[in-house]
Structure formats: C-alpha cells, structure tokens
Image (cartoon, rainbow, N blue to C red; front, top):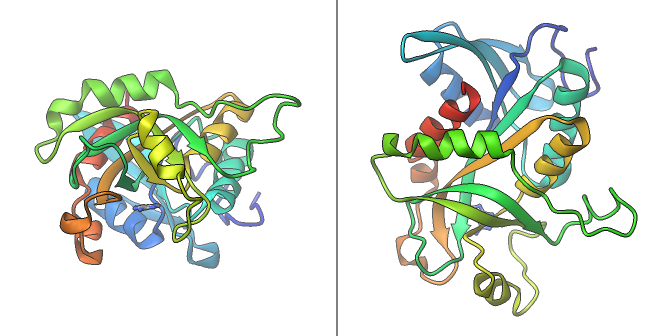
Length: 241
Ligand code: ADE
C-alpha cells in the first residue's frame, strides 16, 4: 500500500466500488452521487473517488473508480482493490452492444454470467472451463430495483466479454445469439473471475449503446456519456444493498 496502480491510503476505499471503464465517467458519477466525493487515487489518470451516497435517507460509503478498457486492465484494478484495499463488492457500470434480437439500444442489462473468448479465466482451475458468474445477491438487488429505470427495458441474463472490439471470429455472434446471449462488452468475465478468486462480489450493469444486428439507433459518443442513469440507479441499489 500504495499498490503499483493505486496510490490511496489503507482506509481510502469504501467496501463497495462502482467501476465504469472511463476514469472521467468515474469522476462524473462520483460528483453526481456524492456531495463529499474526494479523489483518492490518480495513478496513470485512473481516477478513484470516495464519499457517501444517500439512499432512502440512509448514508452509505461508496467509491467510484475507472477500470480502463479490456479484461487485463479491469483485472489489475479489481485485484488490487480486493486484495490490498479490502473492497467487498465491485459493480461495473458500463455500456454493451446488443446481441439478442429483443434487446434495444437504451435497454439496461444485468449480466448474470459472462462468456468470453479471453484466456484470463482459462487457467484458473486445471481441466475446467471456468463459469464467470455474477454475485447472485448483487444481481438480485439490481433486479429488485428495476422499477427505478425510466428509459428502456431492464433484462438479466448472460453477456459475453470479448477481447477484440473490432474483430470477431465468423459465426461467433450468431452462435452467442442462438444461445441466448444478451450483449457484448469487454470486462465482466475477468471481473467475475477475480471476485470468485477473492471470495468477494461483482456485477456488471450495462446500458445498451449499440446493436450488432440493427445499428440504426446506435448512441453517439456523447450519448454514451449521458445515457447511463438507469444502469447507475441499479448499480447504486446493488452497491448499497
Ligand atoms: N461496448 C459497447 N458496445 C460494444 C461492442 N459493440 N463491442 C464490445 N464492447 C462494447
């Protein structure tokens, strides 16, 4: 303490951390939710904040920190937060591409499990294809709060965490769709693996920002920045449950 990638003091993180990919979004979320938010780390520009959020008249300690993009980056921060800073739960708040036909841009997906083409969980348990699953308690808390989402439909189910944003094995997305996969993003499977490793809790709550079949309603870069209120409400509900 500090760790190679986090320059915070031993008690600087709350037990619950919201984790968007973008550190600037972490700053906006922290300012939006917590009047007393203060910066606790900024190594490599990966901003982390801690403060208190009020939910139904009760104050809860909360941290918000960026993960960067992709599973290796998210794994570094999740490992250091769980192992060195005593963090108990990490809730990723991000965006995903829609895969399932019934999923629309603007919907919110609670990722109960995450398939992956990444090697990051491949060698965790010899001889086993590891199942990257979210915390049931966090997923149930997010699901129970779904009435708070005013824009789009809230769905819960499997997602996929890919390593490539711009390249996909031919047939992969069709196969995932045929197996009920709701959306694609780039961090959850590794995050769930790290939480399992340390006996802690993790969940990803994702706003659908684009669709892999029908790209006509894809969000602009600016919309991706602003249309995450529904996912954020569910993430806060899970974090403070
Ligand atoms: N995050 C948001 N949209 C995505 C996509 N289409 N692929 C991977 N990650 C995403």
